[in-house]
Structure formats: structure tokens, C-alpha cells
Image (cartoon, rainbow, N blue to C red):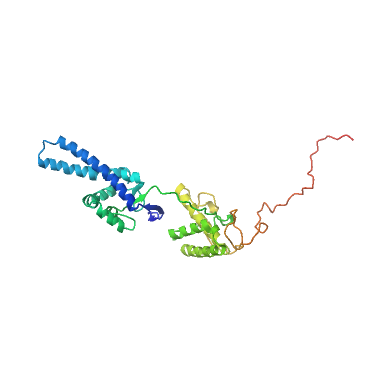
Length: 326
């Protein structure tokens, strides 16, 4: 997986193309380009038979430059990095930041490709691609581009559990800019697989990740909050901010979660918070439960605490004015 980061510090999950797929795409492009070049050359030879040698040589050089250099540059520019061979192999040329290429990127790649592909039969391009960590040839290095795979098999990602309701909105003002992408990935992988881990191993991993996250954010975890619940709440807060940036809207209104507009309430560790029971990974029903807790020991909601009416007591019936016969 390539670690491409945009100007907004957003990591892109792009896979650099391997050398075999790039060679296959190049072969397809070269077969098409040389076929067009030979057809155009034969047509020009028949049309310019009456010209002298100097004019014929000028026409031949112009045809070579236009067909074998200009046409690939124009195709990559208009298709935003996809030639016929790359389209067949599921590849695309992108910038180093993951954006689409422009004419100057295609021009640099095409101009250097004359030397490292046409004049050396692709030997220089293959050597530089093998040496480069992301498989880039000299044209990609000078142009600031990268060939990536577009058709990638969909990976099965685990379900990241939602945080407990009593942690909703508690981290709305937490500074997440200093958290690296590798730590986010480790936290998401842990949350998706914590139900498959041994409880003790899961607890130790959660504590280590929570301490790393607290060190990066500069704010300690609230007292008594289980580390896994703290990780889930912070990940949920990050996803909420990304959704707000993607679909518009401001922060939380008046600090209340779920309301758009206004500034969110600042995050401060709650000293009066009542610690909950120690945490273990979610059970099969997906509930945040304490180790060894049964259904009777689970915290009851306000609805379950309501008084239950007496089933034996007959409800009072309204008067209808009808008197049954004696």
C-alpha cells in the first residue's frame, strides 16, 4: 500500500502498479503507436514522392515526433493519465499527491520517455522502475507522477464498533492533527478484531494504543473510561469531523452532539466522572459488557427502571349507564 498524503494531510490508499503490468500496458501502447506510425509513414511516402531528400527527412522527423511523442502526450492529458494500454490493464498515472495529471506532467513523461523507452528499448525504464521503491521510471521522477492500479480487489474490512452512548460528544474539541496515519490504522484494525482476541491480550493492546493516542493528542483519557471505549469514541469523533468536512456544516451547536452549526464544547477531563466496571471486548450481541457480568448485572436503562403495573389489578372501566339485569 502506498503512503500518499494530500495537501490536506489525508492519506490515500493507492497501490503502485507493478512492473509486469506496466510492461504489458507499454507493449499495448507501443504496438498501437507503431502501427499508426507505419500507416501514416506509408501514406506520406506516397504523397511526398516528388519532394527532395531534405523535405522528405523533415516530414519523417515531424511524423516521428507527432505520432510517437505528441499523440501519447495528448492521450494522457485528455484522459487524465490513462492510455489505451493502461486502460486495458487497469492503470492510471496520477500526481504524487494523488491528483490527476495535467499537460506539463504528460509532457515531461513523454519527453523523457523518448530517451528511456524509445531509444533504449525500455531498458532504462525497467532498471529505474526496479530500483525505485514505488516503481517509478525517470519520467515519473522528474514529472512528479506515479502509476497506480485502479482495479483493486475489494478487501474485507472488519466492523468498527460504535462508542458507548455515554461517551458521545465528549471529544468534540480534541486536537487530532498530531495523530499519524499509522496509529489510526492500528486503532481501526484493533477495534475491528478485538472480539477475536484473548481478553487479557485485548486489554493490554487497548491500553498501549490509548496511551499512544493520548500522547499524540496532548490530553489524557478520562478517568475510569475503558481504553477500548476511549479508542472507539475518538475514532468516531474523527469520522464525524471528516463527514462534516465532506458534506459541509460546522461544529456542534452549543456543544450538543448531533446539532449542526455553532462551536463545539471544549474537551476537558471530567474529574467527577463515575468509573464504570472494567472492560472486556464486545460479546456476540455487540454490547459493551464487563468481564464476568451476566444479563442481570448489566446496567439497566431508564425504561427498565420504570414501575411495572400490577397485572392482577383490574383496570377501572368507564361508566356507560347500562345496568345488567338482576
